[in-house]
Length: 517
Ligand SMILES: *Cc1c(COP(=O)(O)O)cnc(C)c1O
Image 1: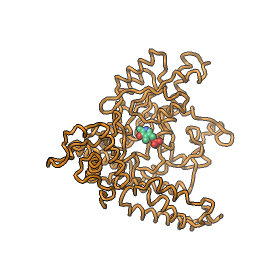
Image 2: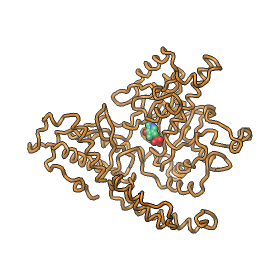
Image 3: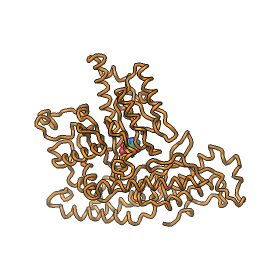
Image 4: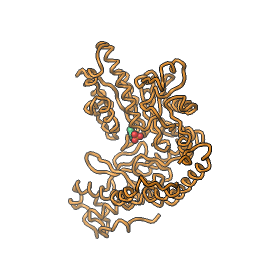
């Protein structure tokens, strides 16, 4: 069994094993003609269940061949240009190299004595990111597992700062549990659900999140925020944080950061900017101005695994004032005794919610060292351009209704029955009121999305707008073309029309509608 340990004597096995894996994946990637095979849980679960975990295969080649049947053959491939569903990006090769290096060396980023140079590299990248944001000389931060953790972390710091503020005003003897019921978090209706989850984890309850209304572009309305803040003050409640979103998950809308920052400064409220998606703008050559005002944040979430073409996980939470990170500092004799801080030995565990932690920063480091920030920014600009072109397609197409013109790279739209009946007059009457029944429209869009996924020809996401089912393209692949978007829209229209009965060739079986690509 020792032959499986990676060490000086097994370097040859390591090289052969990992190279075989890389060859296998390279072939898979090269031959993926669709983003998905459309396999269903009932079809795949028995194959996975049938594996006897107590009877090892003993050999990596055999395990890889088995894995191919269980996973690789039917995986969802984000690199495929017709993967248009969630905020998953194709990854850049320097970052994948980083992933391979970090797994093999296996540094842990909690303390210097488990990481050495890795800690310094992560610190440089935190500084690089805070400088891009413009957070100022006292800024700091730490890498996290994702935007959910970054938001939780930022809101923990905000909570502790708010508690300190209340104690200063009302008496140092007040205990945290006495203060928590009065704390409120303000976020727009389009803010990420992880904010509500964080409120629960932080002991505030979901009710502590006050939803601030948005404008037609799905951006937080500053007048509504002002009213909400004034209301809290009137009621003797404490606004603990305002969460502005720079790139909402559904619409990619960027809240008006300068106005929000002004209000936060006026009320002395912590401003957290959730830029999990919009962080790509930090390196954009043409759209950086969309983030104007982010430099006034107290904390910022960035997800490199969304907009920087990094493999999962790679995220960070950044703060304006490094002193606030102390709220996550606890000491253990075995790990980070207080004398270490006195000796100025660099240590990241004092800033993190995690203890043992991956060297995810390495992926971004190699990306920047190979491609540079401008290179990443160009790719992000390309997907935003593509979304603009997609919006023009949709806007000009009577078969579809598109909700807002995108600021970033998502498109939310839906099929509207009627137009597909065509001018020939051979189909059903486009003015037929049965075709405009909202439940039918919902069902047709849902059906089109499901059929498309079952065919595997393309994957699109779904969401609700004003309670009604819509479809969503999340564009993060610069390889996707407007022709891809047009072809997928045709497929959606075909499926939806088959559902509503508009189709001249009713109920085409899914498989026959799949183009071979
Ligand atoms: C994706 C997303 C998150 C959550 O990030 P994870 O990395 O998935 O945990 C938070 N906020 C916004 C705006 C997001 O789009």
